[in-house]
Length: 282
Length: 286
Image 1 (cartoon, chains in turn yellow, blue):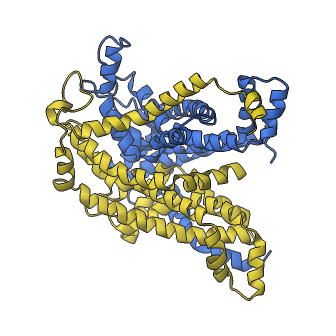
Image 2 (cartoon, chains in turn brown, red):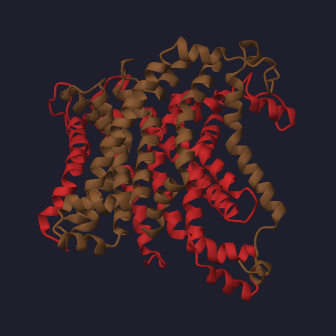
Image 3 (spheres, one colour):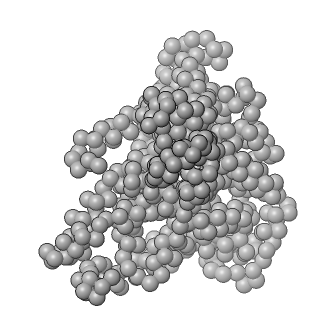
């Protein structure tokens, strides 16, 4: 930006911007600081009036309880299996579907495209019951496959939407050249289109993984056995109506948040780019 | 562009999975809603039973209140945050990343953490507010019928305003610089730029995001279920939770299906009205 431009630049006065930024950071970050602070407090320190900001003697007792005396590690593993499984499956289906939508014209394409998006519009609560019955008929209640399949409804529509706009942005000429050289459609997809759309793929993977990792309602309905329960359900189990071990709950929250925060922040640039590309180019 | 069938082959696997998991269950809900436990046709009995329940109208108004209240604040605060994050200042990148945090964490984590912060006796919020003299004595935020809904709305706003902020921010960043330059030549100040350049330019983004928020709002069971399960005294019972309870606590699948059908119809009407209203407004041409 040139000096002339900088001079003319209007904007919020700097002090207001700084105050606004501090307020936003405080609001967004404070619950996490409180969560972490509470997770390393001992029982007496948790239940004192007035609350103390930082424990005198930080303890990892809550983490010990969560990691060695609860079902959380098992649920963590379940969550990993289900999230990875459904992410991979959604990615494969979305790659093919998006390529079909982005590169071909066929009868009924607009209708089929809007059908895919309806999945995103459908109220979850409205299909829980029939979905439960469907899974029961298929024998998939309380199985990994049951949740992996159900999570397709949640992640597939937006994944297809994001990838379609990515594929469309890749020049067709590259593919036409390959067709002339005799490459097959699938060959083109995997050798030319996919390598060029890595950011889109990453965006879909992060989106699908984060969404399934965080999902609560379907897991609550379709995974009632501890061999398939996921982390969100495990966390909810810690707090019963009358008795909640808040130290352990906060420790479990930290355990559950860390992987997702790490994944997100390492991929943030690609993810946000991929997500917003669809919205702004629409 | 290409042969007709090839594209369909690519699209088909995803469509089959979605049809199996969406089209079939939706059709089956319709069937369940007009039959009884044994599968015999009972007409509109289930609908009458559900409509006759005292909780139903209450849940309906609670849902409107929760979704509407959340969206207004999510959009306003999210847009304000986006405009702020579009300013130039040191550390902007980090602030942007931190802003996304509430949106990324699991809903259940947000719910439990806030429930702990709003705890009547040991919660930090009562402590801070009594200390600052905002309230004279600790409030039972989550047990008091008049505070519980606003608190849940606030938590929901906290969770989702970051999403509005990144989407609007992306819109703001794609505004061509000449628009600002033209305005500055005319001597526009910051607020004139906000209202005459930024907001009109990101209007379509806000519209799309609001639609998503409506749908997510109608789906949002996690936060309320985890914190209050619809209580106290059904004060925070929203229709999705009512459906869930009917199905899995009363195991009355048929009534739950009837309620689902009505809920789906109302949701669909809201979405259609929203889209229609936008289609008829000028300035949407792309």
